[in-house]
Length: 106
Length: 123
Figure 1 (cartoon, rainbow over the protein chains, first blue to last red):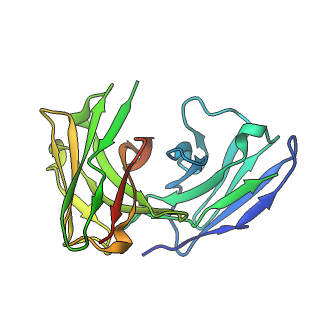
Figure 2 (cartoon, rainbow over the protein chains, first blue to last red):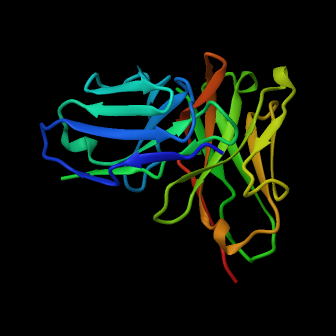
């Protein structure tokens, strides 16, 4: 199984700052990498698929990059509504696997 | 608008069975693959399984942790996906989400999620 490792576990930032979240796969997943945002008490929401394609309705301040085993989610200027937990997930190989999450907090 | 509504969550005794339903609307359900993901209290997301559309045989894939105990099926006439869970354990306590799986570049990603249904396994 492909292990997805996210770093850091917690990221403390201020509104307006840039946030950079990392995700590493234990083997290549090509560009079959998605990012999800989850707020307390809510279902996850798709942000990015194909490593860099924003899902419908996702603001341009969210961007994804990377391929193979190293991926990055960047939030260019954090808004109050962006404080949440972010998960990466590979959808190249079975079983599909998620990272353990990065909590973005103030 | 795509909507997925899970139901069937409940308090269940260890060793018993439970079936969850995911009722879909707002899209051509029969054309799409579906998946189930769970989240134990205070923990991360765990993928459980996947079912292809009937066009691709309606075949399934499962995580090792639930293979042989959980079964995913679908009724395209009712727009419902099911998760049959047998021999439940306390560690199966979680919120269970169904997701639509959209294809791009030969693989599918989880573009839409239901609100989740809570299954608590306890005596």
